[in-house]
Amino acid sequence: MKKYEVRQEIKEYLQILNEITIPALLKAGYKINPINNRESFANMTKALTPPGPQVKSILDDYINAPEYRVPVRIFNPDPDKALPILIYYHGGGGMSGSVVVYDPIYRRMAEATSHIVIAPEYRLSPENPYPAGETDAYNVVLHIRELLDSLNIKYKNQISIGGDSHGGTLSSAIVRKAQFDKNVSIYSQVLIYPCTDHTLTLPAIVENGAGYMLTIEKLKWYFDNYFSNNENKKERSSLYGEITKNIPKTLILTAQFCPLRDDGVIYGEKLKEVGVEVEIYNFDNMIHAFLNMESLCKEECDLLYKMVSDFLNK
View 1 (cartoon, rainbow, N blue to C red):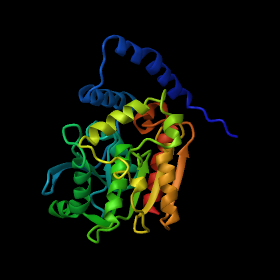
View 2: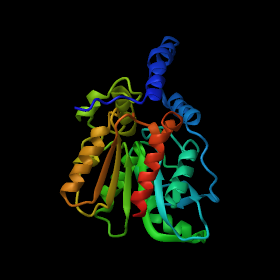
View 3: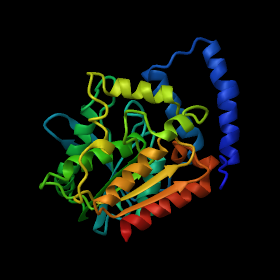
View 4: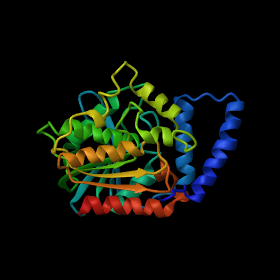
């Protein structure tokens, strides 16, 4: 049986985090809240993710939806060509992350995939709990063509969606709804270590629920803030919703030492059972959020961007 090992650079990072940084914070009276959670996620990404490449055109605008005007940033690597569209939702547990925090990731995604990458600034909990962020995410899919037309941006009528962590969760929620919506056509979805089971009952939750940065306690905290009106977490989980062959082809990328590893794998297998085209790849030596830690795992991040590009462009 293969023995998995966390990549050495990440292992050393985790050792400092678990043995020095966190104990010192707790001793000083640290208590997690939305402010310091957002700050720590932004600081980690800034420290461990190199600046992204130059992108020829970057524009800011809004999706004018009835519920909320969703700010979006448009990364267009080649404005002279009609490129396909990738709507990419950032991660952060539904509570943190932003378009600014993810700027280098959006830039790399646009360059690697040769897609017009749309970066939505969806609403976050606890200020805007479920279903606000999911509503925003869906409205971007519904209205993105209108926005691009109004800006005279050339594009192919081919929309893919994707995201990492909570961004992947949003994507799976979108296709869950869109499979019954004749007004929506999604070419493909890309899920990077998504949560599809908010009940926290799959084996990897226990296996990887401590010591790998994203803990069971942190996940519970995220979910309790996101579902703050006593929603049934199982009913809101894509893994347990109706799955039909109308879900678009799907790429699922997981990490061996991620507590959400099984969320992606089991969801992918359920898609396969109904005839959806699915590719699943597990990064054996990675943890959750490694895309935000590129300086510690450049080879794996390079492979991830290549796999996303190959999948979207085949």
